[in-house]
Amino acid sequence: MTLLILASLSVWIALFNALLFFRNFQLYRPPPEPQRSTGVPTVSVLIPARNEERSIRAAVESVLSSRDVHLELIVLDDHSEDQTSRIIRETMHDPRVRLEFASELPAGWCGKQFACFSLARLASHDYLIFLDADVRLSPSALSRMVAFLESSKADLASGFPHQEVRSFHERLLLPLMHFFLLSFLPMDLMRKGSDPSLGAGCGQLFIARRSAYWRVGGHAAIRESRHDGISLPRAFRKAGFRTDLCDATSVAECRMYANGPEVFRGLLKNATEGVAAFPRIFVFTTLLLLGHVLPFMLLIVDIFSPHYGITVILALLGAVLSLAPRVAAAIRFRQPTTTAILHPWAILVFLALQWYAFAQLLIGAPATWKGRSYQRT
Image (cartoon, rainbow, N blue to C red; front, side, top):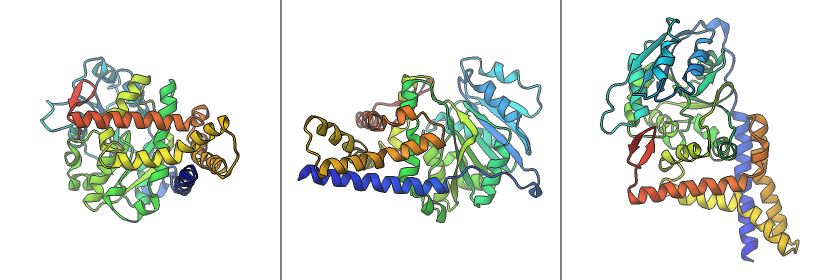
């Protein structure tokens, strides 16, 4: 009877996630092509760069290939210890490129937030594009992001680029980004108001109206955060502004990490501002284990003790409902289908990382990223 109850719960949870996922699948659209009659927008592209020699040239060159915008590109070298500055200087034959250097990091600031705040103070155009140094844009990306911001009537918008994944752990864990976004965020409600709890985004690519950005206080409003993908939209919404999301798969791509250890460190650095926050970690752990791990465990148990009762039928239904969003996401977002079928294993690894981060928070261990240490919050 206990297994039957658990199997029933797993089906309801997986069904809820699948229904929300496929509803959001319809709402989560690529940015539109700009209307030619609206004029050419002026855009400031702002790239914080700390030890980015691996990717900065491709990022800068992709921005400079942009069309249908008046553009300035400002790159801030945030105390890099590699060849980042030299590589940027090699692109400065184009007058649209500026290289600036960060001042000392003030107490109480996360490095990226201070770099973005410093960049915004240097910008002069109507639209601010905050771009990670490992993102490459298509020539139409900037004009389409402006068109999306205007069509959505939002003040801040975020695009989720195509995630380039090569190593096993990249392929296993990074596609969960779209799964969590579309399976847990009610986008209908997000677009109807400015409730801060419904704020979400991707820190790799943001566009903001300059006037709204400064009324919010800019990145100073989230100075301690390591997770601007969540904290920046919530700051805008808390100030009464609207935010929105678009599918940037067709206009941007990014390789966040190069191997398994980088994936783990990257997910751990901001975990306690996301799933690993108290009491959220208990809620997500329960939902994910029941809805996306238990059905597969029940099926495995049945292999060794076959009885083909209602429990195994429910488990099979739960497994199908759990995998359907991952397979659909793999097709649409060009994710690896081979690791989509490892969904329950990906959930277990992800939860293990979240609980490790939560334990680190409890003992007061700092989070580290790019040579800096931050107190977990």
